[in-house]
Amino acid sequence: ETAGPLAGKKALVTSGPTHEPIDPVRYIANRSSGKQGHAIAAALRRLGAEVTLVSGPVTIVDPAGVNVVKVESAREMLEASLACLPVDVAVMAAAVADWRVADAAGTKMKKDGSGKLPSLSLTENPDILATIGHHETLRPSLVIGFAAETGNVISYAKDKLGRKGADFICANDVSPESGVFGGDANTVHLVGKDAVEDWPTMTKDEVAARLASVIAARLDT
Ligand code: C5P
Image (cartoon, rainbow, N blue to C red; front, side):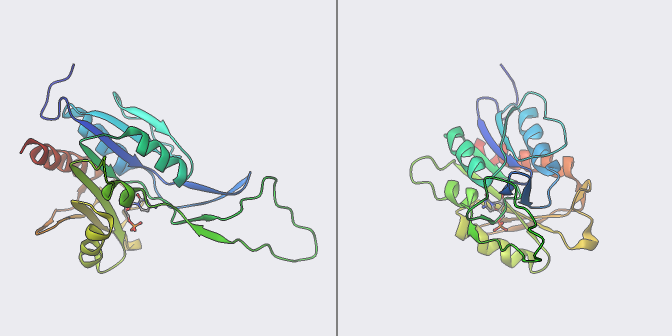
């Protein structure tokens, strides 16, 4: 039994990177600490929601009171996320690898001494946000994605809203000079269908708390 504006509501949050195997000892990954996604899961929980956090490999601690499902690859993340539906709100904060190795080797790839280089053939991963945002029967009433860009942040986010079927995109500038990656601060623009809110630079915990209150206000109406 919990109190709070999100009591009785279910939330799904994805967080962290995905690891896409090349062979049993090597992988392709995105850069992601999981700090923002984990903070969102914790903030939704603090407002009373029943939260499932589907997390790729991270080194930070699980948020208290949250049901954490640990996955490695994008395909596992999709499967675990779909298994969580129906929910009232889905926040996709994971940095999912866009591609995986088409035919990952079952045994460790070896240098054969000839200097011949292996080549990797890639295939596209499923888009978890788009799958849930366009879900025909189980689309959550609120679907929120992130957009990490190094320029044209707002226009890319607006494009992503439609393409991925999201209600909001939290867009942030991840140019190397922004210090977002692995850091504690984030500068977010909350891009909705007909409005953009420019939030001041805040800690990832503050961004999470503010996003959770936007979610609570939306689900309340
Ligand atoms: O297209 P892009 O990767 O910039 O979109 C970012 C948003 O889409 C994030 O919310 C991310 O979690 C989500 N995403 C996803 N599955 C993918 C790629 C991105 O859920 N395969």
